[in-house]
Image (cartoon, rainbow, N blue to C red; front, top):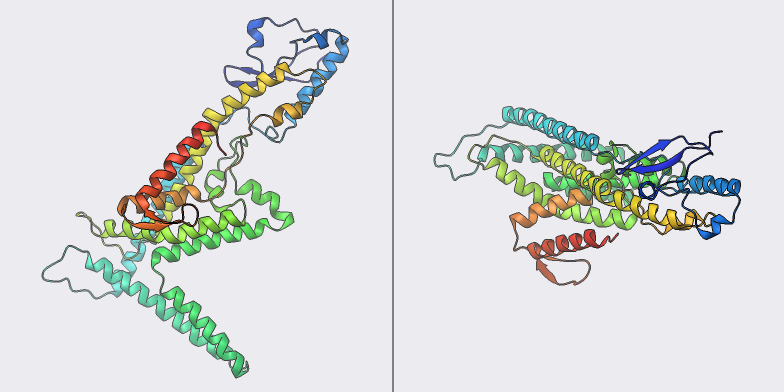
Length: 387
C-alpha cells in the first residue's frame, strides 16, 4: 500500500519519490542525503509502535510542506530563465527607448530653425535648441489648457474662482518648470503610488502582493520587472520617492550631457526615454541579483539547516517550530535597486558634492563617502545575513 510521497534532497535538488510502508532501514550514508530522515529513530521512537511512527512521519511531512515558504514553491529556484528574461526585457527596453528618441528628434528637427555658430564651443547646440523648443511647446500646451480651464470656472463665485484658478496655475507652472529628468522621476513616483493605493483595497491586496513582489521560490520571472513598482509600506514608498526625485534628475542630467557632447555624438532632442530605460533595466537587474543570491546562497543554506533540524526532531514535536527557527527566503519588492543606480551615477559624476542625510549622522558629507559607506554596510549585511 502506497503512502504519500516523501521529499528527498539529493545533490542539492529536491525530488519526489513514491515509497511503500515496507521500507528498509537506511544506511548512514543515505541518511546524510535526506531532506529529513523519516527512519532515523530516537530512543523515544523505539518505544512507539511501528504504525504510529509511520503515521507521525506523514503528519510531520504534511506540516513541513504546509509552511508558507514551501507553498506553491518550485523544486529549486531557476537561474537560466530569470537571466534570459532580464536580458530580453532590458534589450527590448533600450531598443524601444532608442526608437522613440529618434522619432522625437526627427519631429523637433523639422520644427527648429538652427544656424550653427561659426566657432563651435564643444557643445551640441542643435540638441540644446531642440530641447528648448520642446520645453516651450510644453509651456504653450499648459497655457492653452489653463485658458480652457478659466472658461469652465466662470460660473463659480468670484471669491472661490480666484483661488481655484490660482491653484491650477501654480501646479501647471510648477510642472512646466520641471526638467525632463525630474518630470520622468515624478511620473515613476506616480506609478509607485498607484500600485500602493491599489494594494490598500482588500480585494486587490493578494494580486498586488503576487504581481509586484518577486518570490524566488514562486517560479515566476515577470515579477523581476514588476517588483520595482511595488513597496512594502508608506515609509518604504516615501523614502524611495524622495531619493528618486533627488538623484534621478542628476543621473538624467549627467547621462544627457555625455550623450549630446560625445565626440561621435548624435542629435538628441530629449533623453527621457533613455533615462527611463536605464532606470527600469537597473531595477530588473537588481531584482535578478537578489534572485541569484537567494537561489545560490540562501536556498542551499535553508535546505541544509532545515534538513538537519528536521532529522533531529521527535515525531511528536511541532515541525512548525522547526521551520520557524529557520530564516525564510522573503520576496523582494521596491525600486531601491533602480534608485541605487541613479545614486551611483551621481556619485561617480560628482563625488565631492555634499549631501545632508535625513537619518544618522545628520551632518553634510560628500556623496562619494556616503555611497562607499552604504556599499560597505550592504556587504557586511550579506555576509552576516542581516535582513
